[in-house]
Amino acid sequence: MASIPDQSFFHLSDLHLPDRAGGLSYDVDALGQLRRVVAMARAADARPTCVIVSGDLSDAGGPESYVLFREVVLPELEAFNVPVLYGLGNHDRRAPFRKAVLGEAGADEEAQYYYKRVVGDLHVFMLDSKVTGKVSGALGPAQRAWLAAELERTPHGQALIVLHHSVTLWGIANVEEDQLADSRELAEILAPHAVLGVLGGHLHFSVVGAFAGSVSITAPGVVNQWDPTCAGMRVYSQPGFNLCTVRAGRLLINPIVLDVSRPQG
Image: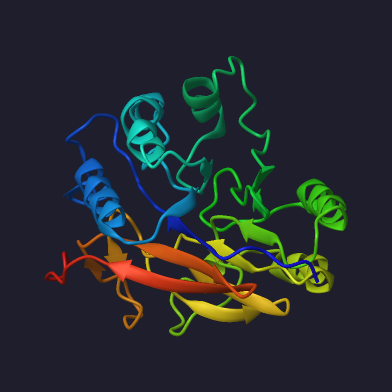
């Protein structure tokens, strides 16, 4: 197995940006929440090699929210002076994202947005688990075939998989229909390749599980936290993110949640 240098990076998820600065998502200032997370990340002793954002950039998928992402959020993340990798979630819309952020006019809403980026010796696979019109997610045959082919060309132990939806179940049965629909097929693809781990979001809380001979972990939401002890939906207004570290070829995750506040409802 090829060795990978020790390094750290930040994993953010579920920004849920509104259409304008100061706008509310889940009754909180979503941009303000992001800035609190960025300030905490800046205060960390870790020096990241990249910043990863695993989807739900926008709350409603409106074009203005992606302009906000491009003009305000990206510069703040790029100020770390490392690559910023971002994917899409179920709240996002591909066509306005591609137009505002990537400059692609006339984009097809059904055209999945996935890619591989090599950062030093870290091979990051940013996958697209969005299914139009659904809260749940899936990768689909074409994306899975692409991933399988790319992994054959990737050194063992150096691949990191990122998508929006959780690939595992979580502690309390509540919205488990939101799990990735083709997680079993994904596991079959990943198992022979000793991937570092699988990062996700969507749940707005951290859940860790064994997956495909590796580990799967979701990030706390940037916009808020959902209570994993509650079978319904109990929401807290503090933001969070994952501090990720690779040491001795192993992926270590520290979920960071800022403050403790009263439930929103």
